[in-house]
Each structure stands twice: as C-alpha cells, then as structure tokens.
Picture 1 (cartoon, rainbow over the protein chains, first blue to last red):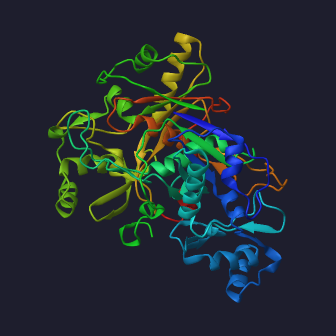
Picture 2: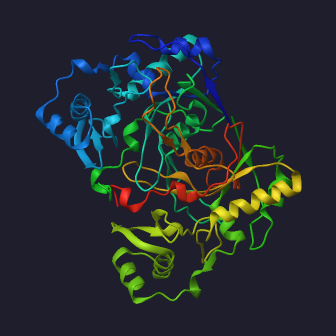
Picture 3: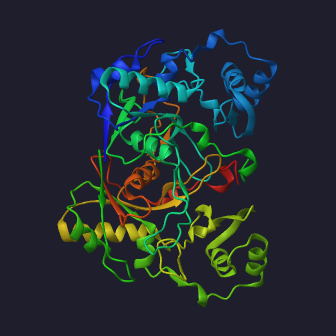
Length: 241
Length: 241
C-alpha cells in the first residue's frame, strides 16, 4: 500500500475546482482513495467566517469570560453545536449539528487568513461525492474520497486524523462471522477503516506542508455507497456521554 | 510512504525469536518503522493463559452472572486492571495496570488456540526495544518499533489500531510554536503519530491474514528514546474519566 502526497500550492478560494487542482497535480488511478483535508473543503464551500462580522450573544460572552476564549469564536461554536458535552479547563467539547463530538465544533483559526476561521462543511459526504463524480467524469477512474479533520480523543494524548465525510467506501469494515486462524469466530467485529485511512494520510499531510490531499493506493476494499453516519456512535450506546 | 505487509505463517510460541522471523521474511532498511501486533508479542512472552487454570473470585462470578461473560475471563480482566472505568451493557472498560483504558483489559480469545486467551505484554516498550536492538545487532540497520493493539473508543463506532509500546520514536509529534502557512502559530500542538502509524498498519494487517508485522517505510521522523506513557492522558486532565 502506498501513501502519496499531493501538493497544492494555491490558497483555496470559494468556488475553486478542487478536483481539477487534484488532477493537475497528480496522476489518479482507478481504485485510489483520496483523503482530502477538511480545511480546503471548507474554504472551497465558503464555510469561512470573518470574526469581526460575528456578534456574540450574552451566553457566548459569559463562557468566554470564564475560559479566556474569543467571544466571537464561542458564538460560532454554539451556533454549530447541538449540545455542549463537556466544558472545563478552557476546553469546550460539543456535539456538532452533524453528530461529531469534538473540541470547538471543529472551528479552526490555523491555516486561514488573519481574522478568519473555518467551520466544518455542512455535508461532507456530499463534498466527497462531488469530487468522486467529477474525477469519474473527467478521467473515467472510479475513486473513493474521505474528508479528514484532526480531532482529540479521551484517554490518550495527542490528536489523530478522523473521517468527517465519505463517498465510495464504507467507513466500517465488518468482520462479523469471519473466522480467525484457529477457525473461531472473531470477537472484533468492526474496524473503523475510514478513520485509519485518515490517520495514515495525516502522516504525510502533516500540518504545514501545503499537502491537503493524499492518495491511498493499493488498499483492498469494495467501492460501495455509504455515509459517515455509520461512524457515529448512537448516544444511547455511548458509555462516555 | 509505503506500508509493506510481512507474512509470518509460524504460530508464535513462547521464546520464539520474533526478530529472526521478521528478518527471514522481509528486507529491512535503516529508518524503517516496524509495527508489530500485540498478539505475537504476548504469545512470545508467554502472556497466554489456559482458561481452565483460572479460579474466578466471587466478584468475578458476580460480574459474569450480570453480564453473561465467562467468569474466568472476568477474573483475568480484574487481575490485569487498576480500576473499572465503566461497566454497562455487558461491556467492561477498565484502566489496565499500564494505564491503557480499553475493553476487557485487552484480553482476547481471537487468533489463539481453543481454551486460551492472551494478556497484554507486561512492558511493551521493552518488547519493542528488544526487537530494535536485535535487528540493529544482526543487520546494522536502525529501526523503530511500535507494538499495536486494536481498541474501541468513545463517540465513534468501530475499533482502530493504537500503540501500546514504542521504541526509537516519540509517540507524539509536537507542533508547539510552529507557524502555519499564514505565519500564525498553530493551534493544534500535538499529533499522536504512533497511533496513526498503528492505524495505517492495520489497513494491511487486517485480522485473518497471518500478517502480524508491517513495515512503514519513508515516514520522516527522528529516532529518539521514548515511552508509551507520553500517550496516556493523565486522569486529572481527562474530561471523560
């Protein structure tokens, strides 16, 4: 399996043709998986906000004063969230309207121009599907696309890349009923391959190298219709909500 | 970056020379990272228990009766644990004596002979270091080794491969003070690269293919002394304990 960086030097603007930028910078094969950084999808879709245009509510002002956060950013976090999951030590963990549990609703000031922040895409499955369709149309190659963002997690230090949108592959590889090498049924039933693919891609993307897209080549999988929602644990099955 | 599977068909027995088995099956380069499945380390180190030899305590019997679990396995889980973190819906999440938070203390019946289970290695950093030293001695190549196990996580469905032992690289890549492409200081400060490397390896290891070792080649990192404990979030900084 190969993990191939695609360097795109252009700063992405709303309406840019990301598929064209990818095809201009790399040779894509049938069966490739493209991992695309959330940041360029958000920029391309105009999910970027000038902070000076945000008017914080009294709640946002209150939370900010307690946690030394920018009240305009807190206002955006609250707007993007279904509920606050934890609020402590200056950290705000929320459930986004799409069901992701992450810090600050995925709102991010890094790698965006001064005074602006990016929000998560509204429907990253659709963002991924558009890239698949465009590449199929322009090249005849059937690729799968995973949109990746960097999230923290409980119990373990450091952040890892996770999937927030997917097209053309299932996010979970289900081993239910498979036999192990002793012909016993496997206890492990489901691997979150979409998250593992995003993590693999992060190792070459890194954070400062103008590498917002990575090709995963040689991974054996079935191209299938899917949704990122298969990756979200239902609240009533989660022991840590 | 390449991810190269190493197939080892031999069933690992206590005392087997894993480094030799690796070198017999693959060509190793200086700077390679080897990801080794916990399962073969546990078998090699004799961390394998015949269930019929375990005498369950009354507590283990009690928990088992409530959760339809094997009382001998529950007894082993309790032995391996510092504390129970969650016990619900038949799921037992514990903190192991090494500080990992995972289901069933990492005790596993899959890919081991009938009537036996594997326990996690006592000190997987040391297990990793032994392989590094042996390969350096036999080939002159300086490699890094990460021991991987498959853990679930809150909020997201499916399991991913995580690091439980490391030698020759830091588990966290620290970006603190680094500038982004707009010359602003990056907000994201620490990436759990060891976990990402294990996740990348899992994509080719899979669960049933006799591929317990994977080479990660072409990843740019510094060979440094390290400990897996850098990956464990201190209890007082964890919002989900």
